[in-house]
Amino acid sequence: MTTDTSPYAAPKSDLSVKQDFIPSFSNLNFWRKLYLVLMWLLTLLVIVSVVRQAFDGQAISGTTAQLAVAGLWLGFSCWQHTAIVNRKLTQLTVLTVINIVPFFNIIGALILLSIRRVTKKELAMYNISST
Image 1 (cartoon, rainbow, N blue to C red):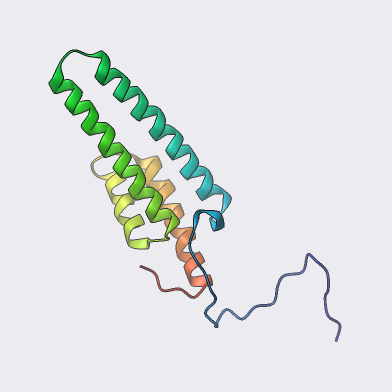
Image 2: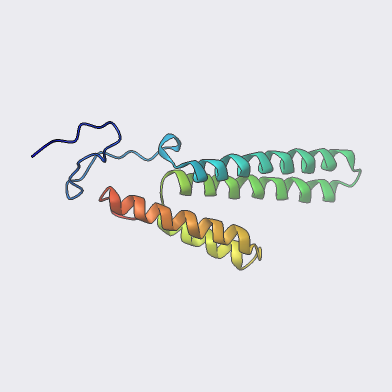
């Protein structure tokens, strides 16, 4: 029996043994990292433009509403970031539903559903219970 010593050979591993896996941004796949980076860039752009418009206006009630929207957007982005990075399946499901029901954001819901599917496979591969 010959041993394959090629650097391109698939690694031999026993998936029945629980492996050490620490969820972090660095061990996300390319598409989830790209989604998070684009989400934060869009969030930064929206918050800067909303805050800029809020302080250019004269009405205080409009300024308060605009700052509240910016804060909610920031909070929603933080929630998505932590759910994706920490691989929280329940939170990803809730975020998917929130994207569909109040926001009517079908594309965003499909992206989050795909992220949830990949996360579920990843957790099964590392033999980690889904939360």
